Amino acid sequence: MAFLKPDTSKKVDMKIGGTIMEILKTVLLFIQDQILGMEWLGEMIGSLLAGAGMDINARLGGSIQFFLYDVIKITVLLCFLIFVISYIQSYFPPERSKKKLGRFHGIGANVVSALLGTVTPFCSCSSIPLFIGFTSAGLPLGVTFSFLISSPMVDLGSLVLLMSIFGAKVAVSYVVIGLAIAVIGGMLIERMHMERYVEDFIAQAGNVDIDSPTLTKKDRIQFAREQVAGTFKKVFPYILIGVAIGAFIHNWIPQDLIEAVLGSDNPFGVILATLVGIPMYADIFGTIPVAEALLSKGAQLGTVLAFMMAVTTLSLPSMIMLRKAVKPRLLAVFIAICTVGIIVVGYLFNVFHAMMIL
Image (cartoon, rainbow, N blue to C red):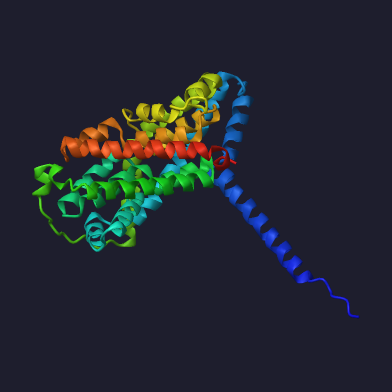
């Protein structure tokens, strides 16, 4: 009677597969923690402050370490990301984007428009002139609103910065949900047939088709450099303000207070965070340090992300600018759709809070 030999090849394959997965996990964690998160920078700043006789475990020392670390980290990542994204953006000037968007119809047009928003300006006030141009060119209103929602909320820069602080699961989920809000919001506005609520000067502007110049590699690099300089000057004050607020929350506000207002014990935390965020004006880079500090103090993930979405998408200055392009009824519908979407997403993230931050 022949004995069956155990199939060792499967065990070997599984062992090799497990080893590869461990290596990949280690590499990804290194990228997230040391390259994007720059944890080495935080340790270095802490050592320098300690060497200067400062107690980094005390409130003042901890605040200074938080401020210096986040300002340097966000600035370095910001400049690098703006350069890369602007170089990519040079291949999609407004004229070409209008033509490409005009080829799509239905939900496909909304999806493409929302994706286009990920490689365009970094705040809502910068997105509105492009929205006006797209609408004047005759693109469907719902398609242009999908762009307007996604552009300040889910650009590629926010993906990398969110990943550096909250991890890949939170960052990717935030971007996917943001794109979903943009697509669904645009489709709802399209279904409501609100074209008559666009201001007359935009509706009657017509489409002026101007060919965009052909750029060389040198031109694209120069364009990217100019975008870095221009965006940095505009964004840096908000980074300083955001990091200062984050440092204050992180080191001076009692955790019990944050948990009571924005933690799981307050069922209205998401609504409160959204309503508080709407009047403010900052871009994604200025809100991330505040979100980081709130999360570390016990605020729920969905509540923090709802605050970020509200600030970047529905800030009061951008709504004032948008009012010049659309009539009050359309503006109110846009605000209502975005607000409801942000609140729903906030509660969903809170449900999966424990799973997302592991």
